[in-house]
Image 1 (cartoon, one colour):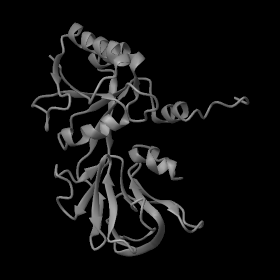
Image 2 (cartoon, helix red, strand yellow; image 1 turned 45 degrees about the vertical axis):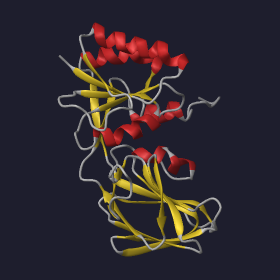
Image 3 (cartoon, rainbow, N blue to C red; image 1 turned 135 degrees about the vertical axis):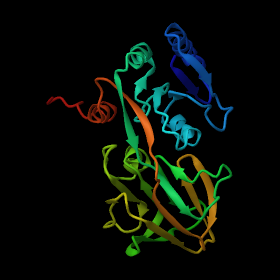
Length: 275
């Protein structure tokens, strides 16, 4: 018997019909369901797959829950635009059918690990699926952020901040800030400036085996630091050291889908009268 965990935060009233359909599909296929709705800190043993019910933000919240277990995660998108949560709520029946028939693959997604400082967040989770952000407090002046890649000086970024994104995160905040799109299997990270005060400063793609050191300067003593959906304030005396985590986050890709069709559809690249 397959054992599937369900994870989510809240189900909007208009989506309850889809959630009930999902539960019924799982029951009809004799799946043992583990309910993890916002109550667990870790997954129980012997879970074959986790279904993240919500949007991309819900998947980010599931990352600490899954940790380094290697349990594959399928995102069922109950919202609008979703890159990681690739199954639309109207496709639940097809998705469950394909899962039961084994018609899916898994993708290994790299994560960014915060090596130093330790214990920044209460949950002690020091890795991110999408990106890390270093940004100024909205009420404070701009930051000067020095970045070193493998102990080689890259640049001092003057502006609102910078972010360092994984291939998964390249379609999130980094994309909005002008960064490039990376395929999920790319062996790279992207460093993207946020509202840089120099028009010649552009995002840069670096190998994901790099160790990056970040030093923050400015008139203020604090800056805002985030890893995915977790946010805190850090002192400018703190040096950040980040690298790729030594484990992956596995996502489920359904049969007949691919990354290129996903971004083409989500970003409406084909919406051109000439096509």
